[in-house]
Image (cartoon, rainbow, N blue to C red):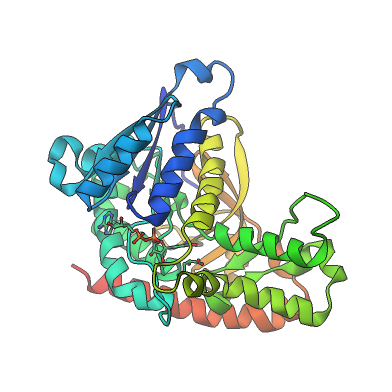
Length: 373
Ligand code: NAD
Ligand code: LMR
């Protein structure tokens, strides 16, 4: 396992790519209003906080950044677009970023699957990958991909970094810090379970791990892992599984042509980013989170402790969302025991279906990345 000591910088910089969109704006608002609350002790006064917002839509991003900049928090906001010239282009947005969050790309309309977004969004993510490789410090940055289809776009980014940018990525361990954001599925599982079982008795939100991928049957909500599920009938449990797997469609349908989940996604992305920021700021040495990432490093070896056993359990599917321990250097271990803790239906019915679909999504991403010059 490559080991390197990453120096604590004197600030925290979060870059959002696609920041003028539905998710981008709401997420940027959360970051602008909340980042300073993540500082502890002496850092409260000494650390510089910055939020760099990039979008291809210059007018929109200039407006969003100006608007946010009036909010009375100590987080500095900057606007970046391709039309702004080098001093405010993507390079200055990404330079020295600690976390890069990517909600750039097309959202679904009713009747579309996430895979229908692949051709257009894969080109966007490939282009942004090149910018990240060129401008970020690959020894420290965390990259969080929100754009859909997550199942194929994270493999696109991984493959492009490994092949087109091999000189830059060598020895940086960046592959241990590139993740797809599947947190919204966890947020939904928690919300929907509480609605069915104990809405009136407590304000505590139940936690349900969700593993696999981020679309339809690749999403495996593990209701067996929450004791509240014991109160559920089989029909209620099947209903909840389906609702989590197709929660995205519920929002797409309700928005009726005006896009997909933005507010709940911004909330989920902020929660996810917050974990990584806590580790970057040194508030904690490690975090336990669930993210979609590669189980193999750029040399084709298991990426972290437990990855080899997980690969065996998931028919060598090389990307998977799984509970993992992450430090400042990136993923350290993946919890392969989650598979042995599944109940019979989760293990024998849902997992094989997930794996066969997810492997196809990953292969699509990798084939595209190979063909793209
Ligand atoms: P949106 O259309 O409102 O915003 C997308 C933004 O990306 C726009 O401002 C657009 O100008 C910008 N953009 C396009 N190409 C770009 C590029 N090359 N560089 C920088 N910016 C670029 O869409 P949205 O509702 O915010 O959704 C964004 C993406 O997130 C979609 O692909 C959607 O499917 C996905 N999504 C993922 C999850 C998840 O759980 N991972 C949840 C919801 C939505
Ligand atoms: C979601 O789950 O809401 C997102 O992936 C957006 C979508 O297209 O459903």
